[in-house]
Image (cartoon, rainbow, N blue to C red; front, side, top):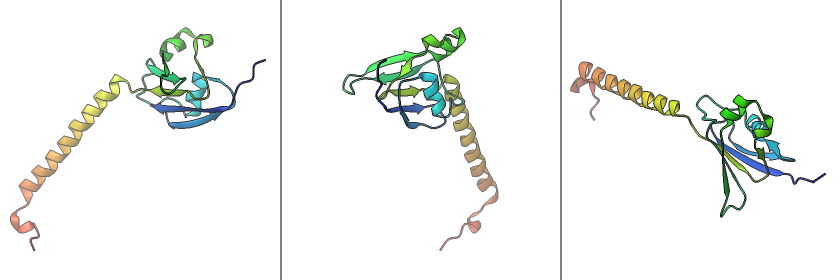
Length: 128
């Protein structure tokens, strides 16, 4: 039976708790995601990136976890090794929500300025 070295992996992006986690042996990608508290609302789990190997020339793996889960085949899950870095990007819907938030924020600022314009005069401004 081969011996596995213990170490750390890192996970960033759309998970509950980004960071570096210690593992005693290689684990499945889903276990790594679970250790990080799971995927969050706007995760794009069809475009997960795993970087491994030499930092100067890393191997990049792209994983479509959505497809793997749909097929219900554990053997398709990639194994995470010490030294791996996992990145889970945001989905397109999140960008739409960001845009809506910017518009909503701009609307509130506009409403505040209109409120000041309609109700304040120079007498209301404390001038020293």
